[in-house]
Length: 485
Image (cartoon, rainbow, N blue to C red):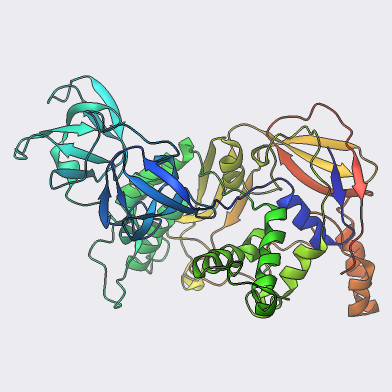
């Protein structure tokens, strides 16, 4: 496994994050719609369609949104978004009988995992489960009964409970927003419903915070009132769930191409009219480049100059670093490797179930004035994988050692009061040690801190990474290269 090892910590981090990824830019081309869908004004499943796109419709493919399942297309002069999976590079025949056409009889499922049954009875055979916001065609217009006859694109003809059908897609974000844009309370705020649509710790916390605001002060010596919805959420997360897969990492070579294109566009005297980028190309490039700070893990004022002179620090970093070309490796794709991270992040990367556990919050004492750590009735949270992954440490001489880990981590929920300054901070770097000249800048008094910083790091180690299973060998090929910075 070739692993270049830049001497500087920043270069090493960029290498670890960007050694394998690939986010390609597609040129405009013809595509055909695989199944009836809606043209969305923005890449959001909850957005209301501006128009219907029927199966077989020809559209112009523009580009795929970075870190997204949505593609920008043009149809009869209108720009909008569809899921990329609905596009086909070849012309299609007319729509099949089970296709769902968006019209006045279209309804949307407003719950998660709605059961589609073979007959209008609670004990009828289950044909499938319909996801939140899935469109169906209403075949029977009698909504007074318990069941409605519908046509599902995925499962065909069947019956569902009428009360879970809506006339338009649901805006999931509205369920999680306590206030409207004008500052008034949001009447649609319903974090409990949002949680059961898509369970997650983040949605549990929205509900818990609403409870904390409602019961701001617990009686002295008593616990906070029990909330059954919150208890059910805790139990659901304790059973375990899969986290969403992380977005694909960008391709380093493609980033260099974007920089070169940007520099060329800034020298009009050397650019012919046919070579000049269109407004669409310029906008596409700027959108991609705006994501670079988060991709590289670089934030702050130093890295804000992305679109000015084109000579910002990030541009210079990308242009300066040239990584060796990929060769046969133990790792076939970026889905098989991750930096050390939380159980939730590793769950999404490797497709492993992770669990959330909570510790009860003690009742406040009389002299604490309610300023105690915790969120409502929870003192802390713990996340853990249900099966172990391998934490691998790479050394300068090429040898590897690994150990199994469930990535268990706990966090005190500092919500109702301010946490201690730098609480939980540990000296040191995750992927390597800093250079001596950095410490010299701060003077002799800080060299003792340098020793403490380096202590947890094993001699000769470069950085650590996570893989889902043990590697087949304990040796790797390491290439050393220094970059001036």
